[in-house]
Length: 363
Image 1 (cartoon, rainbow, N blue to C red):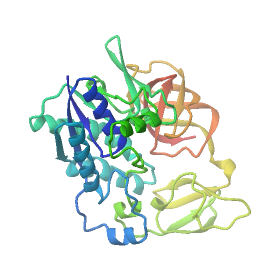
Image 2: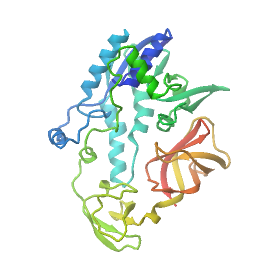
Image 3: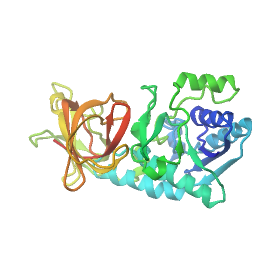
Image 4: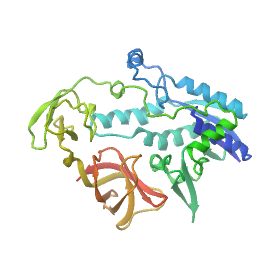
């Protein structure tokens, strides 16, 4: 079997390629190049301030990761290719990121990138350039199971490393051609395999974010002053742009109060940042849109599930309800803190990913 492996230059994808080679697969390594020099980003200032921390997916240090991936491919003994995806990445991921943030929403660019670029554009360009392969593999910690002709996305066996949350947008035609070699391993086991096989990336730190600098660098907008208000509309202070705040933020608001204040809402139309005390941060109902069902075909009636509103969260008991327009209403058994519009909610049935969507409103 011929397998194209997306190599990032890190330990996970490197070991994924190694394991497949050891299993007798004909392995090809490929990296998507998404960075290009940008005059609008003051990279020298970023580095002087030490805001540019190597290890993110998008940043000026990309060439180091490409060099690392190429070296790993040579060590393993597989061919290696680099495909330029900067145009597609900017149109699909960065433009959406900017639009969402400036609208007072909090997007997750990694989820969008996975579905449309890493598992979409990259294998497409590889085939367009004459590479033949049967499956596409990455170093994600997740599993896929075929059942009655449907491809089910499952959690990795290591809960702390499970990345199924970031993969819920994958379609059936993608899942049937994907392999996740690391789904049955722990991170410690993967690092040990890399060390035992002499791979130079065995101790390389994990990527921490999608961008190496200040998000404002990507937004490229001027200050837009507005009011910071409480839930009654009383003006408490002034801000320089709603995109500088995130739901649930406590530090850096700049308003003195008898109790800590939290960001509760970002209002694009009135250009207001709404703040309140901790008790106001808890909600138990949301509506999700842009739903993608994975392990089920469709939601026809209310269903008890476990749901996550952020990647690091333990799934929480909830009931999901189908809406006529295809959206889903989610009612949590317990109140959740700081549900952010624009983030993803992902539904689980034990180890299976049922599906998920983008949080569009909160009650």
